[in-house]
Length: 183
Image (cartoon, rainbow, N blue to C red; front, side, top):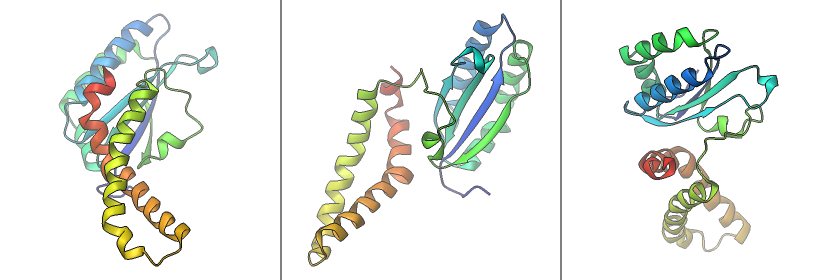
Protein backbone atom coordinates (compact mmCIF):
# COMPACT_ATOMS: atom_id res chain seq x y z
CA UNK A 1 0.00 0.00 0.00
CA UNK A 2 1.35 3.42 -0.98
CA UNK A 3 1.67 6.16 1.63
CA UNK A 4 -0.19 9.41 0.98
CA UNK A 5 1.72 12.64 0.38
CA UNK A 6 4.96 10.75 -0.30
CA UNK A 7 6.65 10.88 -3.69
CA UNK A 8 6.00 7.81 -5.78
CA UNK A 9 7.99 6.39 -8.65
CA UNK A 10 6.77 4.02 -11.29
CA UNK A 11 9.02 1.91 -13.46
CA UNK A 12 7.46 1.13 -16.83
CA UNK A 13 8.95 -1.56 -19.09
CA UNK A 14 7.96 -1.88 -22.71
CA UNK A 15 9.47 -3.09 -25.96
CA UNK A 16 9.45 -1.27 -29.27
CA UNK A 17 8.65 -3.25 -32.40
CA UNK A 18 11.74 -4.22 -34.34
CA UNK A 19 12.50 -1.49 -36.85
CA UNK A 20 10.22 1.04 -35.12
CA UNK A 21 12.62 2.12 -32.37
CA UNK A 22 13.02 5.73 -33.58
CA UNK A 23 9.25 6.25 -33.87
CA UNK A 24 8.74 4.66 -30.45
CA UNK A 25 11.37 6.91 -28.87
CA UNK A 26 9.89 10.06 -30.47
CA UNK A 27 6.38 9.22 -29.25
CA UNK A 28 7.68 8.26 -25.82
CA UNK A 29 9.54 11.56 -25.53
CA UNK A 30 6.37 13.47 -26.48
CA UNK A 31 4.30 11.52 -23.94
CA UNK A 32 6.83 12.23 -21.19
CA UNK A 33 6.71 15.93 -22.13
CA UNK A 34 2.90 15.87 -21.93
CA UNK A 35 3.00 14.25 -18.47
CA UNK A 36 5.36 16.97 -17.24
CA UNK A 37 2.51 19.49 -17.37
CA UNK A 38 0.34 17.54 -14.92
CA UNK A 39 0.08 18.64 -11.27
CA UNK A 40 2.52 16.79 -9.03
CA UNK A 41 4.85 15.74 -11.84
CA UNK A 42 8.45 15.59 -10.56
CA UNK A 43 10.49 13.94 -13.29
CA UNK A 44 10.78 11.14 -15.81
CA UNK A 45 13.83 9.32 -17.09
CA UNK A 46 13.81 7.19 -20.22
CA UNK A 47 16.33 4.38 -20.13
CA UNK A 48 16.85 2.93 -23.61
CA UNK A 49 17.89 -0.69 -24.13
CA UNK A 50 21.40 -0.95 -22.72
CA UNK A 51 22.54 -4.11 -24.49
CA UNK A 52 21.25 -6.68 -26.92
CA UNK A 53 20.31 -8.77 -23.89
CA UNK A 54 17.63 -6.16 -23.10
CA UNK A 55 15.89 -7.25 -26.33
CA UNK A 56 14.66 -3.77 -27.13
CA UNK A 57 13.09 -3.15 -23.72
CA UNK A 58 12.83 0.47 -22.64
CA UNK A 59 12.43 1.50 -19.03
CA UNK A 60 10.75 4.73 -18.00
CA UNK A 61 11.03 5.94 -14.42
CA UNK A 62 8.22 8.41 -13.70
CA UNK A 63 8.11 10.36 -10.44
CA UNK A 64 5.08 12.14 -9.05
CA UNK A 65 4.70 14.03 -5.76
CA UNK A 66 1.90 11.76 -4.50
CA UNK A 67 0.10 8.58 -5.55
CA UNK A 68 -2.96 10.76 -6.23
CA UNK A 69 -0.96 12.86 -8.73
CA UNK A 70 0.14 9.69 -10.53
CA UNK A 71 -3.46 8.43 -10.56
CA UNK A 72 -4.61 11.76 -12.06
CA UNK A 73 -2.14 11.27 -14.94
CA UNK A 74 -3.10 7.59 -15.32
CA UNK A 75 -6.80 8.42 -15.58
CA UNK A 76 -6.35 11.33 -17.98
CA UNK A 77 -7.62 11.38 -21.55
CA UNK A 78 -4.22 12.71 -22.62
CA UNK A 79 -2.40 9.61 -21.34
CA UNK A 80 -4.96 7.35 -23.05
CA UNK A 81 -4.40 9.24 -26.31
CA UNK A 82 -0.60 8.81 -26.08
CA UNK A 83 -0.95 5.09 -25.36
CA UNK A 84 -3.09 4.74 -28.49
CA UNK A 85 -0.44 6.54 -30.54
CA UNK A 86 2.37 4.35 -29.15
CA UNK A 87 0.52 1.03 -29.46
CA UNK A 88 1.25 0.50 -33.21
CA UNK A 89 5.03 0.81 -32.68
CA UNK A 90 5.16 -1.14 -29.40
CA UNK A 91 5.60 -4.89 -29.27
CA UNK A 92 3.64 -5.46 -26.08
CA UNK A 93 1.60 -3.78 -23.38
CA UNK A 94 3.61 -1.90 -20.75
CA UNK A 95 4.53 -3.60 -17.48
CA UNK A 96 4.34 -1.39 -14.38
CA UNK A 97 5.98 -1.46 -10.96
CA UNK A 98 5.30 1.15 -8.27
CA UNK A 99 8.09 2.17 -5.91
CA UNK A 100 7.37 4.48 -2.95
CA UNK A 101 9.59 7.46 -2.19
CA UNK A 102 13.14 7.44 -3.51
CA UNK A 103 13.75 3.67 -3.42
CA UNK A 104 13.89 3.45 -7.22
CA UNK A 105 17.14 5.43 -7.28
CA UNK A 106 18.81 2.94 -4.98
CA UNK A 107 17.76 -0.19 -6.88
CA UNK A 108 20.53 -2.28 -8.38
CA UNK A 109 18.14 -3.70 -10.99
CA UNK A 110 18.08 -0.62 -13.20
CA UNK A 111 20.88 0.05 -15.68
CA UNK A 112 22.63 3.40 -15.74
CA UNK A 113 20.35 6.08 -17.18
CA UNK A 114 22.01 7.58 -20.23
CA UNK A 115 19.61 10.53 -20.27
CA UNK A 116 20.39 11.74 -16.76
CA UNK A 117 21.60 15.32 -16.31
CA UNK A 118 25.35 15.83 -15.95
CA UNK A 119 26.68 14.88 -12.53
CA UNK A 120 27.91 18.42 -11.84
CA UNK A 121 24.37 19.78 -12.32
CA UNK A 122 22.89 17.16 -10.00
CA UNK A 123 25.60 17.93 -7.44
CA UNK A 124 24.84 21.64 -7.68
CA UNK A 125 21.11 21.10 -7.14
CA UNK A 126 21.85 18.78 -4.20
CA UNK A 127 24.10 21.43 -2.65
CA UNK A 128 21.39 24.08 -3.15
CA UNK A 129 19.15 21.92 -0.97
CA UNK A 130 21.71 20.66 1.53
CA UNK A 131 23.44 23.94 2.39
CA UNK A 132 20.41 25.90 3.64
CA UNK A 133 18.92 22.80 5.28
CA UNK A 134 22.10 22.11 7.28
CA UNK A 135 22.52 25.80 8.12
CA UNK A 136 18.96 26.07 9.42
CA UNK A 137 19.17 22.82 11.38
CA UNK A 138 22.49 23.84 12.92
CA UNK A 139 21.22 27.30 13.78
CA UNK A 140 17.92 26.22 15.28
CA UNK A 141 18.71 22.85 16.85
CA UNK A 142 22.39 22.90 17.85
CA UNK A 143 21.88 25.29 20.79
CA UNK A 144 19.48 22.78 22.37
CA UNK A 145 21.95 19.94 21.87
CA UNK A 146 25.05 21.69 23.25
CA UNK A 147 25.34 19.18 26.11
CA UNK A 148 25.00 16.14 23.84
CA UNK A 149 28.12 14.22 22.77
CA UNK A 150 29.46 15.22 19.34
CA UNK A 151 28.48 11.97 17.57
CA UNK A 152 24.96 11.99 18.98
CA UNK A 153 24.45 15.63 17.86
CA UNK A 154 25.84 14.81 14.42
CA UNK A 155 23.66 11.69 14.10
CA UNK A 156 20.47 13.57 14.98
CA UNK A 157 21.16 16.54 12.71
CA UNK A 158 22.20 14.40 9.72
CA UNK A 159 19.13 12.19 10.17
CA UNK A 160 16.92 15.29 10.13
CA UNK A 161 18.69 16.67 7.04
CA UNK A 162 18.40 13.33 5.21
CA UNK A 163 14.66 13.07 5.95
CA UNK A 164 13.99 16.67 4.95
CA UNK A 165 16.00 16.29 1.75
CA UNK A 166 14.26 13.06 0.71
CA UNK A 167 10.68 13.96 1.52
CA UNK A 168 10.39 17.74 1.36
CA UNK A 169 13.25 19.55 -0.33
CA UNK A 170 14.56 17.45 -3.24
CA UNK A 171 11.15 16.63 -4.78
CA UNK A 172 10.39 20.36 -4.96
CA UNK A 173 13.91 21.48 -5.84
CA UNK A 174 14.21 18.96 -8.68
CA UNK A 175 10.88 20.17 -10.05
CA UNK A 176 11.82 23.87 -9.71
CA UNK A 177 15.27 23.32 -11.23
CA UNK A 178 14.06 20.88 -13.91
CA UNK A 179 14.36 23.54 -16.61
CA UNK A 180 18.09 23.81 -15.87
CA UNK A 181 18.77 20.11 -15.26
CA UNK A 182 17.20 19.12 -18.60
CA UNK A 183 18.90 21.87 -20.60
